[in-house]
Amino acid sequence: MTTNDDFNPASRVNRATTDAASAARDGIDAATAGANRALDAASGKLDDLREMAPALEQGIDQAKGWIDGKTARVQDGIQAARDHANDLADQVIDYTRDEPVKALLIAAAVGAGLMGLLGLIARSDD
Image: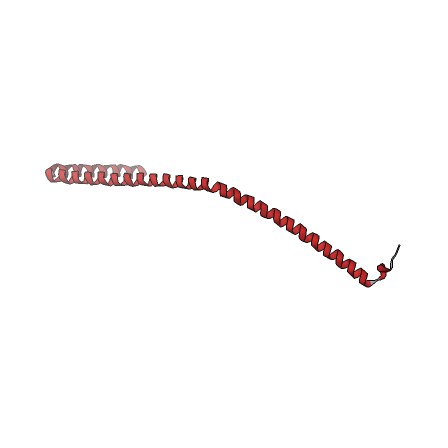
C-alpha cells in the first residue's frame, strides 16, 4: 500500500537522513568497540611487559656482573703477564751483568740455531 508520505519529498529526505544517521551511529559504535578492543589488547601487552621488566633487569644485572668478573680476570691476567715479563727481563739483565761471556755465548748459540732453522725452512719451500 502506498501512502502520501511515499510521494512527499520532505518525508523521503527525513527518512533518508534518519537512516544515514542510524548507519553513522552504527559505524561509530562499531569503530568505538574495535578501538576499545585494541586498547584492551595493548593494555594487556603493556601489563605483560611490566611483569617481565624485573626479570629482564635481573638478567641484565647478572650479565653485567658476569662481564665485570671476566674483565677483572683478564686484567689480572694481563698484569700478571706483565709482572712475569718484567721479572724475566730483570733476570736476563742480572745474568748478563754477572756472566757476560756466558750470556754472549748463549746469544750466539741461539742466533746460530735460528739461522739454521730458517735455512731448513727455506730449503723445504724450494
